[in-house]
Image 1 (cartoon, rainbow, N blue to C red):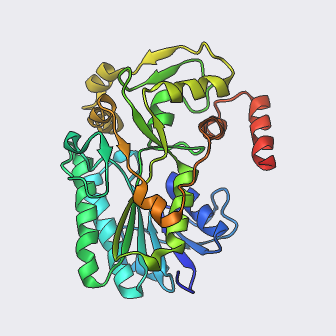
Image 2 (cartoon, one colour; image 1 turned 180 degrees about the vertical axis):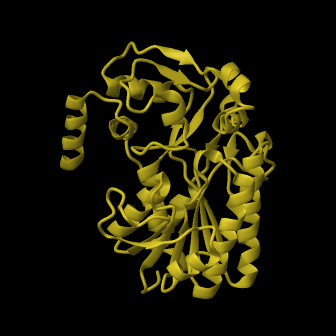
Length: 333
């Protein structure tokens, strides 16, 4: 680990970026965040050094990266908009800054870059033949980082399944299974009956990335790891956890409205992008984390009910008294 523990987190106001910033702070890193406006600070930001700038501006990224030994590239266009125009240019700015500063890049990866030929168990070396536009962009991102090692740029990629956590965002849990800000009266499940699915609790992913950052000097220049997270073998475990946390074992499970999504997708970007991901719900897929466990000794893992409880509480889906109880339990834990 570098003696200079300053990390620049791009996307520190988002879900994974915000959790990662807090995890790095817990690990003794000084954290700098790049954001467009500095007049107000997001929650939990007291110890983050905020600087004004835009990830699409190379000079802003370089200025923010000065003195950093780690650049966490956790920034994505909101609502899946303009991925084809923004994602790769933002990564190029991060690579340019890393080249100038010598910082290691830390990238939260996804399973979008895999097609069914890599299922059902995803290993780091599995072929990447994506079926979607976002998947192809993800492949290009990783290929660019691989190429950049020839330019002296080092990177770490941690790939994970579907994110869920206390902060609403572009994820299936808060945009599909439940409705943020409303009590859970039913569960809308996108998967086919009996098909397994991989879930990744954001605080666990962030803790894993912070541990990888602490050990970054021990890894090869282009290092890839898989995060196993919560493996739901048949789709029932996540449903059961939501029912238990909501205190209603009879909560109905509704079929996800895929047909409606298809009809609306030409007019709503988010729906179009969600529809593209349907293939990930039709076949079981899980991530092989043996390489990660060999590197860290164990994968950070919050029990599923605790993770779902914190998530529903953060999304405003629990009654006030239950939310208060969950916060007290979290403090006690």
